[in-house]
Figure 1 (cartoon, rainbow over the protein chains, first blue to last red):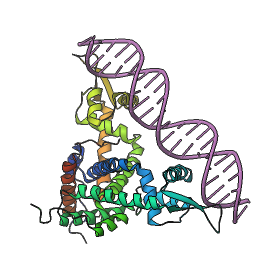
Figure 2 (cartoon, chains in turn purple, yellow, orange, green):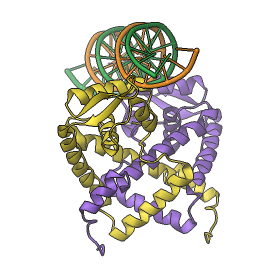
Figure 3 (cartoon, rainbow over the protein chains, first blue to last red):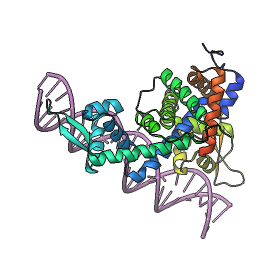
Figure 4 (cartoon, rainbow over the protein chains, first blue to last red):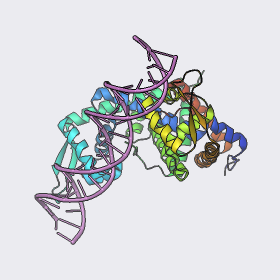
Length: 164
Length: 164
DNA sequence: TATTGTTATACTCTATAACTATA
DNA sequence: TATAGTTATAGAGTATAACAATA
């Protein structure tokens, strides 16, 4: 049990917030900055954030249908279509008609797609390092712990970045 | 000087990222969640995130011109116009033609606007508390420290939430 | 001539709902 | 009849640039 159960909502805290110094505000600012930086980092790969997100999800588990992916990512199916089109046009994934249910399209990586995912992970590595740079390994672990605690408490869906 | 200068980019770290467990990813997820929650929290006030942001900036320093506000917030002037229109229609702020330069419109809070800002800060208080809830006061301070360190390093502009 | 605020236009995103093919 | 995927449509949001008033 925490030593101090609740950070108390005092007038001082109110002033802190008015000056833009709360945890919530900081979290949203830094989070937005992370997203912006990520979008820039992956642009040279020829992917936008959504394409990269979908590609990553396909890589995490091949063979899922577009409907399943739509559900996991939290996007309407009709929007998945265009993303799959893009990635297929880029030669990174391919649609395969489901064997048992021929209505479904199971998504698989191509060899080229696998290579691209590798590059994507390299960029993710740099990206992550860039935001860990000012921290010691100890502090980084601490930060992850605190963020995961908040994420769990707030019911943040796992492995999905819900805006993109 | 940090005990461990850089978190090293090892294959293990690569796998961690592939599973969606990096700092950067966590930061963007939690940040997005904070933004979503904030938008919901303030809806009952009849404000969207941008209107609230502008109202807050006017409250922080009254009398600035629309151009100045546009610059601080990082939005084109043409978009400020509509926001000011909304807030003025709601009776929360008013445009006053600049005394020395009659091209400018200096923005001021109305009494009603001041009340609304008060309520906004109350909601911000709850909002912030909700995201601090799972942390001890000590941990909260720690988290703020780490986030500010990252924000400084990454050049996050102060008191501006750049997406909105 | 330059700048502040405003309006108009064109463009992108998005959700929604028809539509088709399979089941 | 219901569901996976697709396409069409209409609406919102945005940036850009033209415009009017003032400097």
